[in-house]
View 1: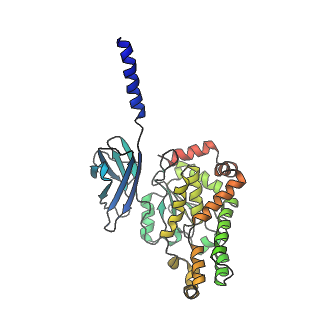
View 2: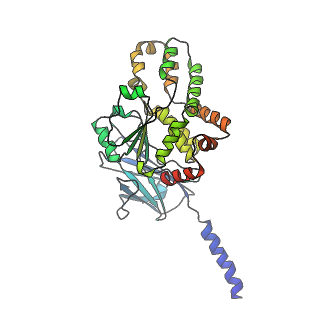
View 3: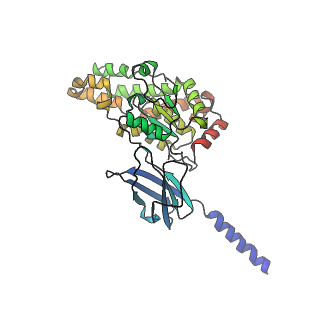
Length: 357
């Protein structure tokens, strides 16, 4: 009789234990106008208990003996103050003493550099997360001031990948000299090609969108050698942290970031959102020299203004078209990564080991 009772009870306990899967936890970190960090979270399904928040200047090392904040999980947010100036704050959240997530603000505040951000915190389809403080994307480091250079030093940057052409680098050399500099001048259609046609009214908004789609697809089709070299750099853990940059940190850095995120199996919507984030981080009127030189015509002609705006901004359609073009040619993005960029399954697993929590 005892044996007959024991087996069902044991089975029930094992089933209960196995069914207690880790909840889905999403965390974001933002800077408030007052200088505080606002950390927000959601859990699916909802869990009870406390969330403890720890701070560190290093993304992989936290002193969990002293939380800087502690609150109920169901509150959904916490405001914390950091006094770091040149360093950077990373936060580890521990939910109900069981589940932990690391977060940081995505956009790193700089003085003269713009569109400088961390590719950490994106979730894979397997619910893993890209590591914070490993890989950054930025506008040209030629614009870095003393504050920016000190910030880069504090981030521990070891490698800078510069996607600009030889002429761009000659005209505006990179200011950061404390890491190894790797030049990968991606072949692409010059902005000047579009700008002259826009100002002469040979191209309108629809024409520009088609041109941008083709230009983005050609970035993938015409630069396999450079992307192979880029992935080889990322497959060596000694090269991290890495900063990728081009002129505005928008198109060339954008397509490179999209490729890396795709290789890590990040969901497509997150890849698009990262690509589009440039639109809220770049003041095109301020940073585009050609636009400044032709500001009078740009400001006086609404058609030229609309077309120019379309040319300068990042569009979901251009990246989507590039991915679709490659998928049609190779069968899938995964096939392109393996066949054209030589990123084998073994290499992708190594990249994930380096880049994912």
